[in-house]
Amino acid sequence: MIGWPALNASAAGGPNIAAGDKAAASSAGSGKAAGNITDGEQSTYWEGSGKALPQWVQSDLGKATRIDQVTLKLPAGWASRRQTLSLQGSADGTSFSTLKTSAAYTFAPGSSNKVTISFPATRARFVRANITANTGAKNGQLAELEVRAAAVSSVNLAAGRTLTASSYTQTYIAAQANDGNAASYWESRNGELPQWIQADLGSSVRVDRVVLRLPDGWETRSQTLKLQGSTNGSDFTDLTQSKAYTFSPTAGESATISFDATTTRYVRVLVSANSVQPGAQVSELEIYGPSPVTPRRRPRRRNWRTPNPPPGRSSSPGRRRRTTRPSPDTTSTPTTRC
Image (cartoon, helix red, strand yellow):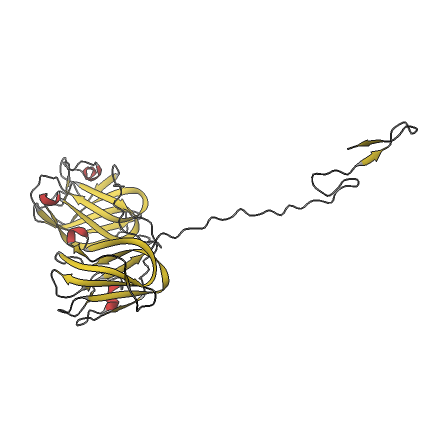
């Protein structure tokens, strides 16, 4: 099973950490080996054999790594098609857990025949795409399976915290926006925008990023919203300006909003428009802060003990006691040595 870490993150958009790594598949056609998904060439591709789905292909990162984003590609010149797939991860290559539940993704020339899928950060060594349907062929197909490491940040500060909202419709209450279930969601009363949902973090803490999610498989929509913060739950100030954010299957049904780090207790999402539904909708409200800084340990001060000085020696460091030693000639004047 995958080890869920204490830290969470949003996709950093950094380098493809699967480039050049080993790959494997449930099956492969002639000249369409699994290794093509990590060769960095979008023109080469893996394709399963046997014409019977489901089929899978996976990359081996070499060691367990914290990841939160995968980009899948098909050859750039191919005609548009949809593949239904889920993402899975494993620490040992045997026991796999779901990183992203099954959904249909469109690969289209207009978007360079690629889709980017984000998910909550977790540790995995093996990353697998499990394909159950393909409108363009009878087998699963992928040219590249790119994996990106998660950027370090705080834990999800909203996890387990109390959520409240300006309203809700039917059974879609505010608490469903941080229950860890991407299929459940909060929805405000319809036809009464703007509406808001907010998290009480328990005390004032540093925050700099919010991730909003909608259920997997929902049709593409945009919601116009801004983030606000408050230390007392009554007086709110804007953390971001109002902007339209797109939630789509190809973007993992999520939107990541970064802003200058600020100290606040309450974080509010104020929604003023929704292109599909006449109400505000949030499946998961995640809040993060800057990565905690581990203080440097001061060197331990050693307690040096000075041994008792022998007779004739001073216990004070750096100084010697002046002593008088007799000359072999007892009739001569004594000499002094330092």
